[in-house]
Image (cartoon, rainbow over all chains, first blue to last red; front, side, top):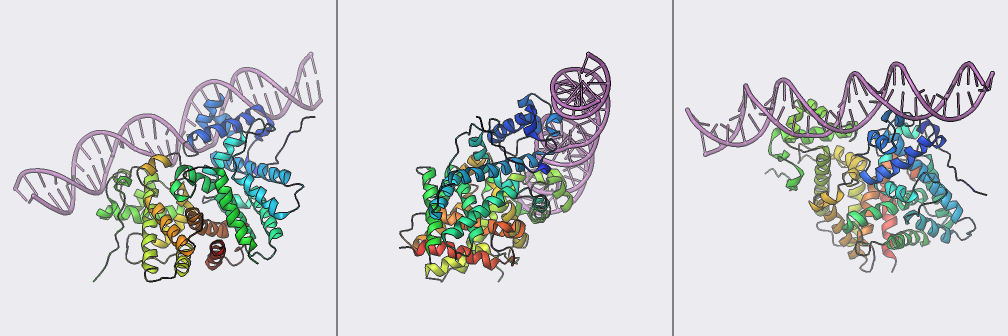
Length: 225
Length: 225
DNA sequence: TTTTAAATGATAGTAATACTATTATTAATA
DNA sequence: TATTAATAATAGTATTACTATCATTTAAAA
């Protein structure tokens, strides 16, 4: 039996469901590769279409514009990650162990997951690090938020917030700490590799150090009575 | 006697020094207003020129492109903030009090500072929150970094890192904690106002709550022996 | 199997963006 | 007063970010 992981996406993110056709899957696959390679700013639907071997208009039939595509990819990633988390913390009872696992999952470059053939999760992880915040740092956040484009991110944040409260029921800032962990897992990675003097990991450039830092940050905060 | 604060800017950031002429100062002033109003994505030199009453080519004589202008503005802000910090923590001896003051300065919307007539610091603060990370989240980080465009940010981070070590000499992650404080001061503010469920401050939307969160985060981390 | 519909490919076109270049004019300086 | 430097005015180009049209292929329904 072959299981296929399907992440249910918000329908307002696309014009035609990219998961429903070969062209659509190609758009997802190649957009991940192209954004990874050139960065979101120089990424265009024209270049994407050339890569795929279709036309610009072909891409526009699936996504209204490249912003929506980026939001789609980030939403997909957060959905995927929440599944990974629930999968890997499934039978763990100790909330501390659970939260540690989450931090590790957040801060670890994923290996390409075979189950979703058309999205390379390891490239997508790098995109999330470098471009992820551009999905919401716009003038349209409010509208986008009204259309629930950021629900997967918020859901993940809520899940982590709940774990934090399980560890330390009296802790006052579970949600802010959750978003801090998420953002910092990525920012510290970006800094480590690009602006190393903003971190303490410039020498080794090891993800494990980011994990150690976040663990220290979180669990000293929570261990306080 | 009238003192004028002059922040020494990296010369590679501009083609002609905008502080050296009326037109240049107008470019700074109106770009802050326009980026604040429309967001960095829809900000163009054409619109800016119209606002000022000059031509597109006129703006291009000062800045190579809008990315350089954004980097200029963020660098200016970090320079300005470092001055504010050294000014306001000048005669404070207790490193804990000092660090608290820094957190407050980072997380507090500034009032427009009269001393620099051509830049509205309160608008610039909002720009830093919403657009600041776009200055380095690009494919050109490496080149930009080689040209020392991010020095003011790094310097500030180093200053805060030093304060952290003064508070707790054995703390292992002073620089990462410093960059975390800086980024989270802004991200929590953005989230609070735009994606409130990612924070614990959605009800009141008070900066003071962000400050309390950051103080808790930092000082439980540092109080650990 | 034919009909019909849906998706794609091919091509064209437009307004805006991100620039560069040229020349005339004005202002500041030697 | 002559010279230089900055600006204004105008034009032009390649690319981006789309929209529109129509013919063709593919797939599903009758």
